[in-house]
Length: 279
Image (tube, rainbow, N blue to C red; front, side, top):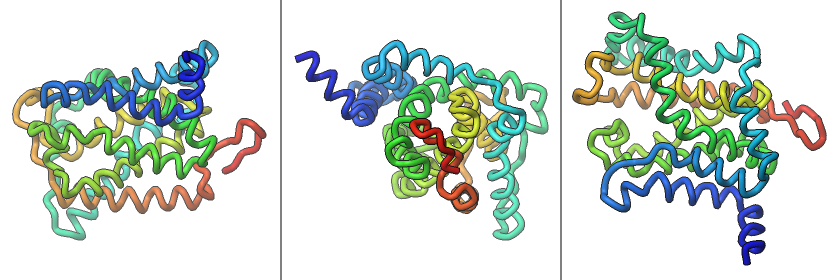
């Protein structure tokens, strides 16, 4: 019986991972009606790797999670790729569409705290999720479906995994609202695609292409688009500029389309079984 269950998990490892991630993360929501456990994907990813590939898989995950020697340009890409998209979006929204310019209050008043805040925010979403999304799911999916399709699948699941937050009044997701869930989903696919590209070009570094990039996206969105500062943390959530949010999604889509076309849909993916670079 145990052998049959183990075989079933290995044959359908991604489905098992998704169900386990949802089961863990949504536990506060479906048990008490509120809350969200952000560490669900990482826990599910580690469990799935342990069950499907054992010690060898865990050793490989550890190596990818600690892989930091990937070149300065890829560190720069991980740290600033999403900030570039946001700055272009702000320019388009402000100067072409007549939108309101963000205040950049955090960068103006608390710029010296950037390293501290950046390191502190890693403990939330990035560490809680990336051992699942990039640690387990991405390498498994792109071996079967290719890099572009793997990014679409992960981005879609990633967006829907956040669903309980759309019902949590104090979350940014509630401000976006269910009517704009498709826009949010597209945005997650955009981010997942950029992460796939950097992950593949950093020798599958979960650290750089996963944790650091994920954290940079969260950080720049807060620093560039909101009025939040360290001094105001814990107070009322800044109101989302919906027009700018939609513009940033469109700019992200155009950026990713250019990236996908430039890499011939492969996003730097290497077929490890044949040793042939697909990019």
